[in-house]
Image (cartoon, rainbow, N blue to C red):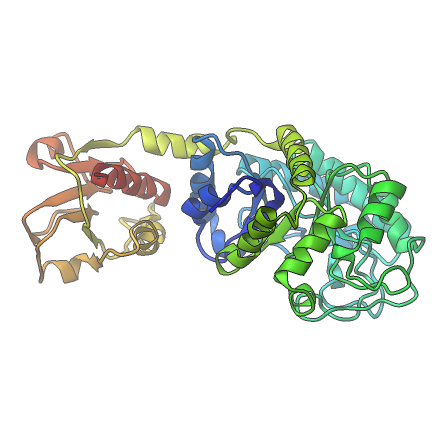
Length: 451
């Protein structure tokens, strides 16, 4: 797959982070969803997968939709009462500060927030408590405060959803909202005007405002180029809402949507489930090849993305030392390539009241199958009754049991001593049973298996 203009895409995965696909696309950024970070351990694994590509020279914006309240996705953040509460009571800056600190510690550099939409009594549930207020001045102030809080920790904020989603009574994830009696001087739009110089990202709304343009705002040259660029002077990145949302997908073909978005002066297409929507990227490159898209224009946009990346994207993040330590301490002796191994894992259990190993062991099987999708994984009690032909990677918890296999690589998770190295010809000692340590063991076995 061509990735010459990967900078013009922001992608998400609805399961695990697919690093091979990321290398092929080389997108501007990655958005993490709840499935990528079901708990803190899986968030750490997702970050390690992404930053392993940074080690190869890639650079990505890394974002989430963690707005606070109604939409919270990152597992290591205390729940907040939400934007409406902050609009009523104050505290948006404090929350931006708190959130920005945690996000930056754990590898994020971007956030798809704040919501600058204004709340109405008839607003769709998709706006709901995500808005700060029905008062425009409060929305503006709370948004500005929140952005300032994020910026102290180097997190790029995103104003959304331009030119305003608050008056939409339907959910653009499924249908196309139409908002009447709404023009470029509407007070909802003017909130974006006042905040346009505060953020480097603005996300569009999949909404039609017929008094201004009969084209959906995401694809409207009137809204994006004439209003946002020329009238408001916004020189940052215009990011679409997800291209596979119903409001766009039902009414525009990928080819038409792509052409109109870039002609309207949009910069980055968001694809929230890239693995199931690769035709959007494939269609884009076919349009580049046929000359339907202006290469010079796309190059300029890509350069702008790079300029703003340099402002926010760093090669590592503070908490990565935990992963680095896990990797560096591993001791191993593997005599030859480990090709197509089977895996044996222990039944999850804690050693004592002062132990949380069980929590990690419950996820080892899923982690192995993510890294070795065609492998077979057996629990220890199953494996002792079987006979193995190929190599076996045996994750040992407290004691080695007899397994019938010609070749076994023992991974000692918890119980080992000075004699371990002398008693077993092939072994790995990670000095930890944490998932990040198991992840690095699996990467070691992958490398040893390379031919």
